Structures are given as C-alpha cells and as structure tokens.
Length: 205
Length: 322
Image 1 (tube, rainbow over the protein chains, first blue to last red):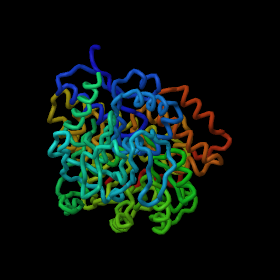
Image 2 (cartoon, chains in turn orange, purple; image 1 turned 30 degrees about the vertical axis):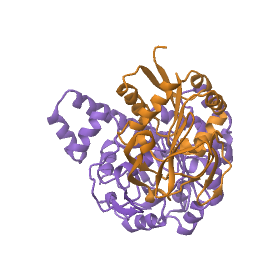
Image 3 (cartoon, each protein chain N blue to C red; image 1 turned 45 degrees about the horizontal axis):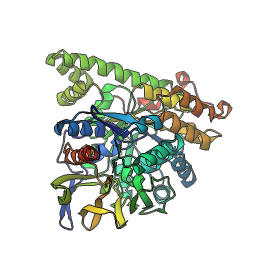
Image 4 (cartoon, rainbow over the protein chains, first blue to last red; image 1 turned 90 degrees about the horizontal axis):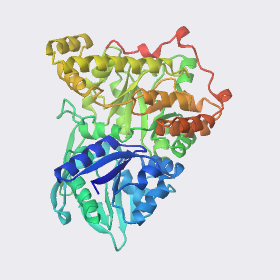
C-alpha cells in the first residue's frame, strides 16, 4: 500500500477545515496518504478512515440516507474502519440523541457509538465557548476546545472510554475504532487530535 | 481555507467567565465565524410560522430565518418592515433543533440587541426590512451573537466584515422570485476578487492601497482577502432563489450555500420544493441529481415572480453606500 486513504464526509458542514487538518496530521507523522472529500457510497468504499465533520446532524444524516452513503459507512465501520465524528459527526455515530429543548429525536443515526447524546447541551450560539481542555488518556494534556452549539454525552455503554470532560459533561470518547468529540479540533490549528486519529488508522493497517 | 480570526479580538462582544474550574471565552471571531462554517453547503430557509420551520427542518434546512412576513409580502405590504415578533421567534426556537436566525433593520442597534437577548443563533442585518440608519450599519463587534450581512459587491462585503459580520450573503433582489440579481452580485464579487488577487500576486502594494481607498475599507482587510482570493468569511447566495436549478447554479459560482426567502413558502409545493432545493444544493456537482431534484417540483407551482427591471422598491440599494 502506497499510502492511507482518508475521506472527509462532504455532505454538509466544515469539510475544508478537516481536509487541511488531516493532511497536516499525515505529513507531521511522516506518512504518505491522500485526503479527499467523499459523498458517494463508491468513494466511501475505498477508504481506510473517515472523518464526519461538524455541521447539522439532521442534514448530514438525512442526505447520507438519501444517496446510500449511510449504509456504506455502517458497513465500513462494522468492518473496523476507524472513524472520527466531530460535533454533528459524533451525533451521527451515536445510538441515541435527544435535544436539550425539543426532546427525543427521530433522526437517521449510524447507531454504533454506545452513548446517549444531548444535542445543543451547552445552549444556543451565544453560549458557544472556547476553553482549554485535556485528554490525558491519549497523551494530549492541553487542547484548545472550540464548542459551537455543542452536544455532550449523557450516558455511556460499558465499551466506551471517556477521554475528556468539561465541568462534569463528557465531551470526548473512544469506542474501539470510533473517536468522537463535542468540540471542533479542525478550527484550532492544533492538529494533535487529528494526528491521534491518523495513528489509529496506521495501527489498523 | 477560510480563516477564523477576525481583526478585532478584544471587543465588547467577547465575554470571559468561569464555568466550574474552567475559564471560558464567548463571542470570539473563531466562534462566530466558526458557526457560519458549520452551515456550509446548506440551505437556510425563510419562515414565518412554527409549521413552516418544521417543514424546513424535515426537508434538511441547515437553519431557519424567522420573519414577520416573507420578503415578497413585505414588498406587497409596503409600510415599515421591522423585526419579527419575539414570541413567534421563541416558539420556533422551542420547536426545531437547527439554528434559528432572525432579521433586524440595518443600523437598528436595539432591534439587534433584543434578538441577541432572545438568543437567536445569528442576526441578519437585512435590507429586506426598512433601514433605521442607512449611513451606519451596526458595529457588530459589540455583540456576542454572530451577524450575517448582505452585499452586492466586494466593497460592501468587506465593509460589513470590517464592522464585524461573521458571514456574508449576496443581496440579490429579495421577494422577486427572480435569481438574476443574485447572479449579478456573486459575479461582481468574483470579478473583483480575481482583480485584487492578481494585484496581490504581482506584489503591487501601492495598487492594493488604492483598492482599499476605492472600496473604503482598511488595507489589512483588502490584503487578507486578496491573498485568499475569496471572501475571508463564509459567503452564501440569497435573493430570488426559487428552484433547485437556481440553487445549484449559484453553488457553481462559488457560493458556500444558499438562503431561500419567498421561493419556498410562496410556492404551492413548499414541502417538495424545500427538499428539492436542499438536494440540489448538496449535490450541485452532479447534474443528474440536480435534474432529479428539479423533477420534484412543478414549475406551474413556482411563485410567479417579478421582473427586476421595473421595481418601485429596490431593496438591494438599502445601505449600499455606507
């Protein structure tokens, strides 16, 4: 294999930022690989790893369902492909989501990450915030957390490892080949979390 | 990539506070512009009721914009158009999970303040409403909530960004169902961007300074924009979009997403049309998918629309010289 092939799900959201951060992470690790936008099941089937970016989870879910990508992503994750869900992406990966105000949601989810998510857990946009957080378990002691209408995790299954908390709220988790964060590493210029994800793919291959 | 840092870091809109043992900061450029980044490749739909907002959310809208009347009705009604009823905005905020935006009048600092207190996710300082102060737009750095502003050309866009807008949209000609003006505006911006990029690439600082004078903005904003070759914030198309093909066409011109005003809920097939416009915006690169989206609507049910040549009221001219 000449290099790893990482896709950024490009249905909706901040795709370009994740392409850049992932490319920088690959380069920084001294690896070879390509990072591309993926939208179709065909593009997804070739991937070694997938990032589901921030955006609106209802939109990303509905549209991925329409064109068959959702099914393909499920298949790939079930076969062990590492996947990194950011904010809306983490919601997509989860088994269950509810909204802080509106309540239980019936939106298309990938149904892998054994957590229950509270959407918009910190409030609306005016309450969006930046704060320094840490993920000591994966060797990142300081990280600039950018939380935009962010979700949090309110219940976790037994296989879920909690990587970070903000004021008692769970904001980063790992479960096997799945990584999820409430916050947006791609908006910070700090690529350490993207590097961690790329090394998850490296180990797998 | 579109940068996230603004020019003014420490302004009234930036709030520092402690939550538990964590120091936090709200209202930064990263958060305001970052919010707009999350909307990319999406459709923001104008709505006037809870029912419309739910149709929009189900159709895959990335956010809704709450108005008292749809732009075409504002045009018909005449009189003074103001910000929507707070009670309706709140009802909509309680019934959908996607972001809720609302419009305030150009220059009306306190309508914007009321919307910020209402906790809408983004404020649109909009030419669809009757301007309160055409000479001075709101100084948006004073707010913690992000703003989107309309623009017809690069100068307007950069002046709004300099005032703190976290997102730009073309003005088009609202409420006409006619996409022609939006097309002109985005092409204007693109042409001007190409021009300043070539000046930047040639290393001609003196010429860039004269551009800054001509556009009535600071040199730093011009330089940053010229180096990027695009607007330094997320840029959506708006004004007169009525069909999936309209939306897809604007995406091909380099827009990051679209706002649809009267085009959906003034059509007789609003539900199908909302879905179809979302599909066309998402899959604009695939003509076959756009055709499928266009097939979902019936042209006989599109809003009739207006020829923009014979309008008594040209909303796009509001606040354009400031």
